[in-house]
Image (cartoon, rainbow, N blue to C red; front, side):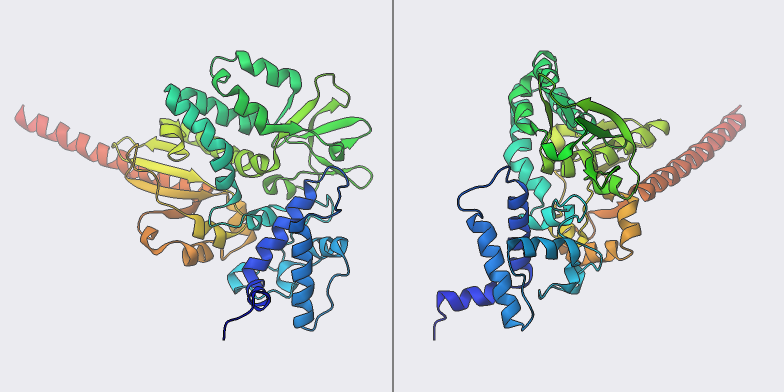
Length: 391
């Protein structure tokens, strides 16, 4: 007998599909700037309805309202929800909403995209890919590199600063894309008429409690007392703008890890190419023996989703080894991070793509350099001995 549409829905909206619907609804709510009619979008209402339905089927008390669903997301870790999720997806300390800022967490945003690719990759399809194609058509790789560095190093700009970028020799080509990358800073970031910028990442800090702040980026929020880099007064005639949240979270965050790696590799006197061939991968280094390593940096809270979205690097420019690099703190937070990633990584990539932390990558580079230098010394000694014998 054929199932009715309603019956099919009851079977479908559980586990991962329902989690994605709920996460998408929470992100939708966070983007509402003012009350609307109807009060909740179809996305939000559908998520709430199916969560209530699932709770009733499981004979568990459901949230009583949409605000109640949001409180669940802020107060109940994911593994306590009545969702049938694989163990790899149940992190005991993961919440979908930050209880201090009442905004979706990075974990929530990663789940919110109803596709195999992560939020960063989806956003690149909409905006970053446009930047790549524009620069490729103009044969201006330096413009794309400058654009990426702008998103990493200047996540907050005034309206006047954005306007001035139109005259920048490298960024003028992408000025329209840049304008769409930034959005007006909301009042939620204000305290006493001032916006405060995080010293670590340069993003706007969220005021919480009486005299505390919280940074939205996972790499910064572990610091319970974030430092203020500078403040900007509200009411600036040109307005204050910051990168859209997906760009802040998935471009600025990993980008800081990318530029940190660039700095450390430069200290080892290695030539480093950033985002070669219009972002084929993030960093390309050439060792003294001519071996080339390709490096892509991700900063994801969910190793299972990262594994699913892993893809082979584009083959041009050529490389000998490929590494997917994740900041060390992710491995510290979850000791099974690598195991879960490998469980979900496509099987054909097992011998093509190695997951390491940023500190592990630097250790591998230093070990390779020692081996190369030792080989060079042996060859130099052999050549000197051979020369003496010939003489």
